[in-house]
Image (cartoon, rainbow, N blue to C red; front, side):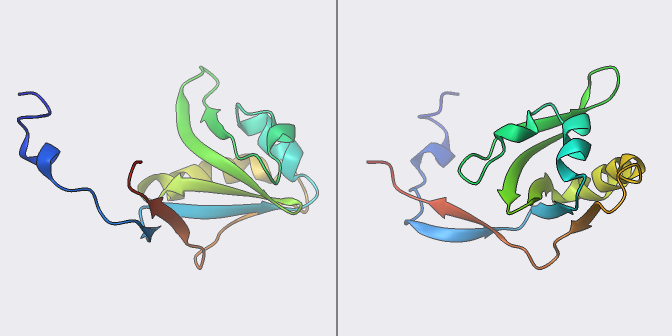
Amino acid sequence: MSDIESPLANHPLPQPRCVFISDRVMVRIAGPGTDKFLQGQFSQQIDDVTQGHSPRAAACTPKGRAYCLTRLVRDGDDILMELPANLSDGTVTHLRKYLMLFRGTSMEVESDARIIGLLAMPQ
């Protein structure tokens, strides 16, 4: 079956609007060791995470298998990391094992944070 034959292909696109993305969780990493901690855990060069640039990053096992794909956002001296809600507890627990090496650095789930997505019609 091609896409044209699929009943979903004929479904109209939604009207432009903003929506809350509820299947993602926001985590704040803060403190003096934030950049060093994240540089040791993620594939992304942390210096590339700026106010105007939000790169994707992966956290990998020692064998190189990715267990976390995320986007990193700089918020002042802190870093915000978004994770799938169903994987967030395990990922945060795993990362906290290494966080204790960086005194004064914390990692907390931002339970009040909301991620907003924009739906727009193609031109």
